[in-house]
Image (cartoon, rainbow, N blue to C red; front, side, top):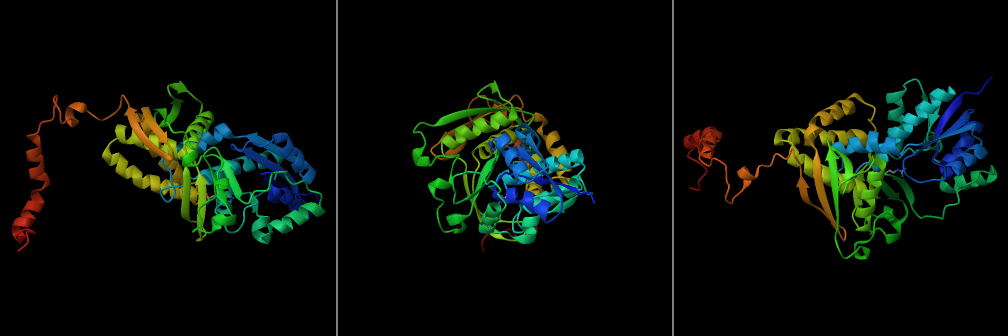
Length: 402
Ligand code: ARG
């Protein structure tokens, strides 16, 4: 009997390296390893070589940074997506992208199944599974780590026994997941919510006391809601995200400490550094307030929250996410202009904005000379605005203390 093929989401780490062999030996599949680079800067040839040595019949390595920036980070930016008010969804956004490449590789190689190394406790399993369901309902999903709950020690032992080369990274006490939009740090002392994250947990953000004494300024140019330039120079998406992250991170901006609610019901302490995404969201949100109207902003705030939860929960490939994206694209038509951020020793503020679409009218807003507002029009406006309240109050004698 010929063996069926399976495409494995292959990070190159210990867990997915042993999965190549487990899927082949225990599950009976021919394994195609698939790695989508979303900004972790790995050595691609070394990665492919190790996948083959572990037993993969093929390895697909795709450079997906621009795709990730354009098709995943930017739509999330339009939605000002911050889960539970603070987490920019960095890990959550990469899973649907990886799933898209798993499915593409499955079609290319005629595979009948896809596999991932996510555990049964986390959000990533939900995101992989739902993304594959949304994209390709005919494909089977295999998650050996969820079935077997293989410990790190057992994985190391398995690798040793089977001669599987484990990446020679220096031993980190933390589990890291990183991409252009942010870096998540888990495990070790971070599992105690009452312990401050040690400096060594952070790689992209300086401690505020190490940050430069002088503030840094960055002007981000937007066109129809999308960031397109930095300090007046056009920059393509992935590079723009990287450059914003560098300025924000060097000035100590972007650290996040969240008591997070996972999809599966577990409350966990999550530590992130997301300098680029928090800065871009702050700038986007400011320009949005400047160039759109209150009614839209109120409706959108509700949709932003819904969008954020959909993405966190793994429903990237869902009709509602597409519908909200369509709303956001329409809403963003006027969001063109520049916003200047000021970074200083761990703090970030919007300090300036300009736009040909700014709804702000100095003649209406000023308290100084040049006031064009018709003050007398306010009187009739308030009479009607308060008409029913006035009637009610007359009827009941008002709230005035007896
Ligand atoms: N709690 C975050 C999330 O669910 C981070 C997950 C990081 N994933 C990982 N496999 N370490 O989005």
